[in-house]
Length: 563
Image 1 (tube, rainbow, N blue to C red):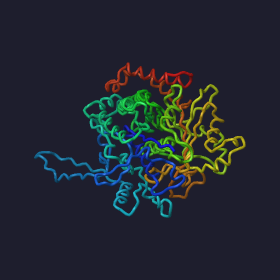
Image 2 (image 1 turned 90 degrees about the vertical axis):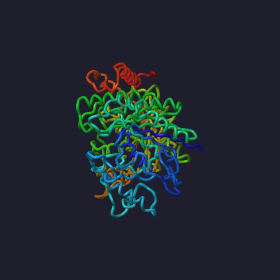
Image 3 (image 1 turned 30 degrees about the vertical axis):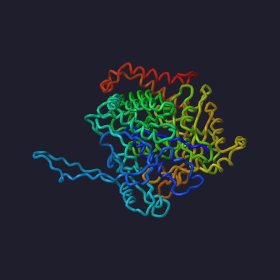
Image 4 (image 1 turned 180 degrees about the horizontal axis):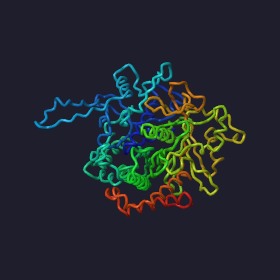
């Protein structure tokens, strides 16, 4: 029986950490305490997590994670985490100020309902340590629902996971939310990387600590903002990780919020340039998969991607990042499948080499969340154009999966279906698919039948649904039932405890359309009119190189040649 190899995660930017907070909450909500059997043990948590001990000898279990953000972005979370307790904040009365100094007091950030609940749980030694403090109430009478929409100012406001003391790494040369000295241009990230902060060296040291604990590192995943200076910093991180860990696959997930607080022409052009430069900088990674609910690479007000049965609020990063975190969690389940679970696992290296073929290094992640299937007639859903029912989670696609075309070049596709019993799906297949030897083969055959260029298809089925209890936002429509299926809906006042989900991950025509759209839009941008970009250190030759790289990449999706 094989053993999964560990993976290290790097998060780079404020929105990436919004996404990451949901992602790590999902991991811990899926932990199985005590002895589990069957579908409870589908996921190998050791792939992303490490075991350690506090100074007092208490056993800890924390992500192999380095999360980078700006000074002032952590809210109530100490930079070293809270495994060793939260540091006390001295009162101003106890500080001996020089005569004549003027003291300004700022109201401290207050705990919201969820964080207060975590503190209550930590003080209660009789309860099991699980972040989902209201699961028992949601499954019984008197369900307790959080509404944190107006109580989230920082990504730590809904973070239930515990981080290693070396996980949070701050860029101190810039302040979060500072409009006078903003971190808004791509080149600023490169300055921070090699400047007085020592961010580059510190990231290298922290990743090395986690890597040296692993007998054999299986790969790395990078979730990075493409807006502002984070894209430039992410580009340096890709270079570093590629040089330090050659032969280890790096899965890059550039990301951006669905909407922005303000829209000016210069801000829009900076965001477009950031997307182009970041995507090009990530191409040396094994596979690059942009994640965003923005519909356009040049962000426009009111242009977010709608999702059926998921009426999220695009202006809330707390909402949009939850959708992306669920997709990232589900799409990457194949390389976290527990050895011995039903079906084979897939290593990050196999995943990257399988999807990134013919020079197509950018892939699209699409999702159907929750799965809009009539459980009494599953074949009608599965045997139609299954991938066509999903929504792409990247800009430049018009919110739809590209339709199959006879001229489409072959490409590989990775499908993950979670939260449904496989036996009923398989036994109710139509006569056309009767020869399929398994449920996974049936799912793959359904996609091949509708999209003949999407082959081979690797299909993975997981019985356990995704947990969506507190602090996951209440973004499900009224037709979604309590356990994540679409039907008659749930009683008023009840939330969705779990959800079903289908993800499709492929470097096919949808990804090609997105890359071509970015190359075309960025090609119309004149650097001379975007002063902040040049002032941050981006040179014209560098910009033209990025544009040419994107054009060649777009051609690889329509021409059978390597780039």
